[in-house]
Image (cartoon, rainbow, N blue to C red; front, top):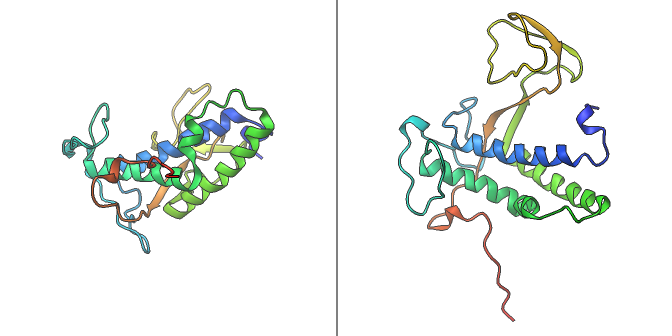
Length: 199
């Protein structure tokens, strides 16, 4: 088992993983790149995003984004993925909650449920594969001409590749994104609707 998973309540890793999941969905939705040229899936819609360099201005109803602005369609897809994580896993509710006062046992039970639900969302809409298939904490060789976006060298990095080291994390790459059709109308910026119970 990787060292980062050995602690029974390693909440820092759990929260970092949750943030990574959200970041992954946003990256897949707004990067403007098709990871493997296979973004269509059975029963789903093809995710088409414009490259950042040619992105159109966001409409007034679109969320505000700092830096380079992706296309409105890209923003809609990013919000859609966040909405799916919220709908099925209550991830946004969990991340927005102040959990500092909860005892470890109660928080651990909540994390287990959220983890299961969000993992199902991930498996349903995003296909992932490890960047390096070796076992973690085992020796690996980083080849000449490696992609620095895919392999990050840490520690005492000296010399030129090939470089020997220990694999601390296998990394992940998206190979396929399958999303349902976007809703029509003005609801594309809604992550979760407010609920009002009428007596």
